[in-house]
Image (cartoon, rainbow, N blue to C red; front, side, top):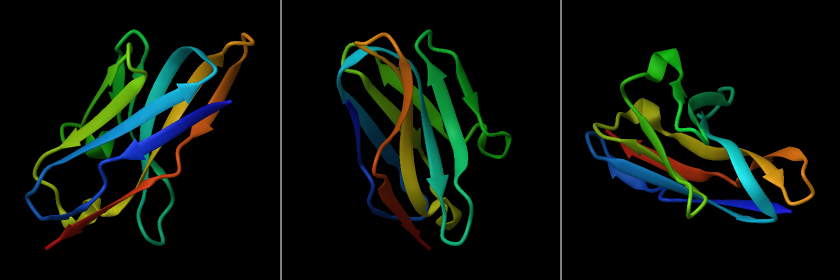
Length: 120
Protein backbone atom coordinates (compact mmCIF):
# COMPACT_ATOMS: atom_id res chain seq x y z
CA UNK A 1 0.00 0.00 0.00
CA UNK A 2 0.99 3.58 -0.62
CA UNK A 3 -0.08 6.60 1.37
CA UNK A 4 -0.12 10.20 0.22
CA UNK A 5 -0.23 12.89 2.86
CA UNK A 6 -0.77 16.50 1.88
CA UNK A 7 0.14 19.44 4.07
CA UNK A 8 0.42 23.19 3.84
CA UNK A 9 -3.21 24.14 3.43
CA UNK A 10 -4.25 27.19 5.35
CA UNK A 11 -6.32 30.33 5.56
CA UNK A 12 -4.42 33.06 3.73
CA UNK A 13 -5.21 36.58 2.66
CA UNK A 14 -5.63 37.52 -0.97
CA UNK A 15 -2.23 38.22 -2.42
CA UNK A 16 -0.53 35.77 -0.08
CA UNK A 17 1.51 32.74 -1.03
CA UNK A 18 1.09 29.01 -0.68
CA UNK A 19 3.29 25.95 -0.69
CA UNK A 20 1.65 22.57 -0.50
CA UNK A 21 3.52 19.32 0.06
CA UNK A 22 2.57 15.75 -0.78
CA UNK A 23 4.62 13.05 0.89
CA UNK A 24 4.34 9.53 -0.50
CA UNK A 25 5.25 6.52 1.60
CA UNK A 26 4.78 2.78 1.61
CA UNK A 27 5.54 0.08 -0.93
CA UNK A 28 7.03 2.39 -3.55
CA UNK A 29 9.34 1.22 -6.29
CA UNK A 30 9.07 4.44 -8.24
CA UNK A 31 6.68 7.34 -8.73
CA UNK A 32 5.75 7.66 -12.39
CA UNK A 33 3.99 10.99 -11.99
CA UNK A 34 2.53 13.20 -9.32
CA UNK A 35 -0.22 15.70 -9.79
CA UNK A 36 -2.28 18.26 -7.94
CA UNK A 37 -6.01 18.65 -8.37
CA UNK A 38 -8.41 20.99 -6.68
CA UNK A 39 -12.12 21.06 -6.00
CA UNK A 40 -13.91 24.26 -5.16
CA UNK A 41 -17.34 24.24 -3.51
CA UNK A 42 -20.03 23.01 -5.89
CA UNK A 43 -17.51 22.52 -8.69
CA UNK A 44 -15.89 19.50 -10.23
CA UNK A 45 -12.40 18.43 -9.34
CA UNK A 46 -9.91 19.89 -11.82
CA UNK A 47 -6.28 19.30 -12.65
CA UNK A 48 -3.91 22.04 -11.54
CA UNK A 49 -0.53 20.60 -12.51
CA UNK A 50 1.33 17.35 -13.02
CA UNK A 51 5.00 16.37 -13.01
CA UNK A 52 6.60 13.15 -14.24
CA UNK A 53 9.59 11.33 -12.80
CA UNK A 54 11.70 12.83 -15.57
CA UNK A 55 10.65 16.33 -14.53
CA UNK A 56 8.26 17.07 -17.37
CA UNK A 57 5.42 19.28 -16.26
CA UNK A 58 2.03 20.22 -17.57
CA UNK A 59 -0.51 22.67 -16.24
CA UNK A 60 -4.18 23.29 -16.76
CA UNK A 61 -4.45 25.88 -19.51
CA UNK A 62 -6.51 28.22 -17.35
CA UNK A 63 -3.95 28.04 -14.54
CA UNK A 64 -0.73 28.07 -16.54
CA UNK A 65 1.73 30.61 -15.19
CA UNK A 66 0.00 30.86 -11.84
CA UNK A 67 1.23 27.69 -10.13
CA UNK A 68 4.56 25.92 -9.98
CA UNK A 69 4.89 22.19 -9.43
CA UNK A 70 8.10 20.48 -8.37
CA UNK A 71 9.23 17.26 -6.74
CA UNK A 72 12.00 15.77 -4.65
CA UNK A 73 12.57 12.28 -5.98
CA UNK A 74 14.75 11.29 -3.04
CA UNK A 75 12.07 12.22 -0.53
CA UNK A 76 9.16 11.00 -2.71
CA UNK A 77 7.57 14.38 -2.13
CA UNK A 78 5.84 16.75 -4.48
CA UNK A 79 5.19 20.45 -4.07
CA UNK A 80 2.79 23.03 -5.42
CA UNK A 81 3.55 26.71 -5.05
CA UNK A 82 1.52 29.78 -5.82
CA UNK A 83 2.07 33.46 -5.18
CA UNK A 84 -0.56 36.16 -5.43
CA UNK A 85 -3.40 33.97 -4.29
CA UNK A 86 -6.93 34.99 -5.17
CA UNK A 87 -10.24 34.12 -3.48
CA UNK A 88 -11.08 31.90 -6.48
CA UNK A 89 -8.14 29.70 -5.51
CA UNK A 90 -10.15 28.59 -2.48
CA UNK A 91 -10.59 24.83 -2.74
CA UNK A 92 -9.58 21.48 -1.37
CA UNK A 93 -6.29 20.55 -3.01
CA UNK A 94 -5.67 16.88 -3.63
CA UNK A 95 -2.46 15.07 -4.45
CA UNK A 96 -2.52 12.19 -6.91
CA UNK A 97 0.34 9.86 -7.76
CA UNK A 98 0.87 7.06 -10.25
CA UNK A 99 3.13 4.66 -8.43
CA UNK A 100 4.90 1.46 -9.40
CA UNK A 101 4.76 -0.56 -6.23
CA UNK A 102 7.16 -3.25 -5.09
CA UNK A 103 5.03 -5.92 -6.77
CA UNK A 104 5.82 -4.31 -10.12
CA UNK A 105 2.36 -2.98 -10.92
CA UNK A 106 1.29 0.62 -11.41
CA UNK A 107 -1.51 2.06 -9.31
CA UNK A 108 -3.08 5.47 -8.86
CA UNK A 109 -3.39 6.88 -5.35
CA UNK A 110 -5.05 9.95 -3.86
CA UNK A 111 -4.34 11.92 -0.76
CA UNK A 112 -7.03 13.02 1.66
CA UNK A 113 -6.88 16.65 0.54
CA UNK A 114 -5.84 19.86 2.20
CA UNK A 115 -8.07 22.92 2.49
CA UNK A 116 -6.87 26.23 1.10
CA UNK A 117 -9.02 29.25 1.87
CA UNK A 118 -8.16 32.66 0.47
CA UNK A 119 -9.89 35.61 2.10
CA UNK A 120 -10.55 38.79 0.21
